Image (cartoon, rainbow, N blue to C red):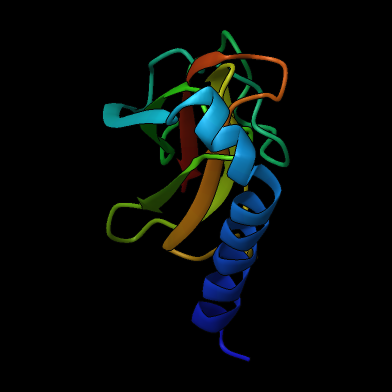
Length: 143
């Protein structure tokens, strides 16, 4: 099965579960509002806002080393439905590939496919289940 078909199948399954499991909740709780906007890209010399899993060079509070770029998207979700989120596409600059992801704030995310050493991928961002409103920035670590 191709990677695009697996991604489409995963997103379709998430949508089906959300629709089946929360049909009554959507009507009772109202619509979920999701806003996504680009966050400033962080580059060499700027302070890393998180520890990047699997990338020892990116550590919170330390300067970002040469060759790395952190591409961000800010997500703001006001929960209405119990299961709602946003699909975010990240694309590294020419000549760089994805290494990891990190989050600042309380936006969660799920990467439904292998992205390491690929230039582009799509992830799903969602709020923690106990919060009615969540804001955070998801960063892709590119090198």
